[in-house]
Length: 479
Image 1 (cartoon, rainbow, N blue to C red):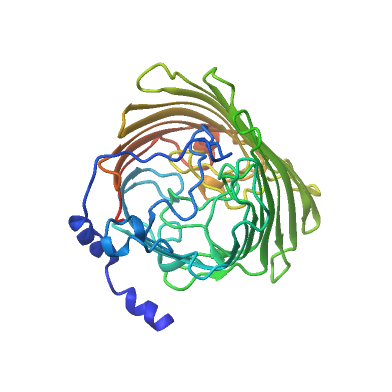
Image 2: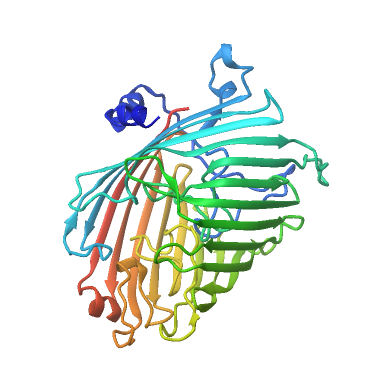
């Protein structure tokens, strides 16, 4: 298998994808995630950038929907092919040790195949991704590069209505999957596949599910090893590290509120110079709309306890967002206020570790520059979203960032830290704007810009001076 992979890596997949794009058709229609309708209890959150990537991925289609007469009855096979290119202009990126201009070209190609309903209860899915970076002044890393890698490869036992039906007649299935997974849960801040980043969070192990998204209740069970992204070889399980989870979904009152109680645990066994670490993380998320008022909300809280070597763990994090949509305006503008917090270690010399464990969530939209992660941070935000045309979406916002503890590290700048706290706690503030234009149901262009103004901590521990980030992104699905 390794020899085949090395042979495949000699081919230039982005170039092939571009050739396929020239030959593919285009149609004028916008894509939106489904809203609450009769026949489902599921309600999308209206909070900014929290709608989970669907399963199977949104670029996949049933072969019966491809418009080929001879394949109209092949509804047991799903296929997908997706390509994305992004040009980035980054000036003085604080994630880099040296200041300067960088203009990387990021290519990502994904292919999916899923088999269902033809050999029930057995199902199968595979997804491969090729992620590459060119034209950069910095060494390649696994944020941008992960060539020819399976990001989904599992077998599934699927029993469609083993658990009966819900109140509106939807079957309540039992699903058991084993293999390689990429998925998103909750608001994507603790477990996400990181759609923005060029590479993907993946896991190997067991995922069981009681119920489905359209049901009034559902329970997901996880026992997984995170996979370490290796740039040019097959990814491998992170040594002696396991992620466990039980994530509930209560949607009976979803026209008002959806509750998502959860428990996550991260267990790192002691090996070499790595200490044993066990983090328990119970939490609750609630989101919904306030009748016909135009207001919506999304709030979550996580408490963490456990052991990190000889230190006990006591940490917490959470966020709340309140939005208002002016439905009477043709652009349907939504204005929102957000506050997010994740504790940092208050004293590195005591016997208690207060740094919040961020698990495997996404980096955006904490920061459009991708500077902020869900750890040691306190951030209020204001944001406006609008849809001037059926195929054009705009959003812009302003964010402020403080360290929750000015004695703990700042992950976004190579773990910069001042254990004395004398460098201050204000990280900086950021303005960002983005436009997404759907050329067709299959093709979207995105342009964006973000400007970061450093606070006293960045000026003292990293370097002074503003940073600029602009990008152009092109994405296309072939089916």
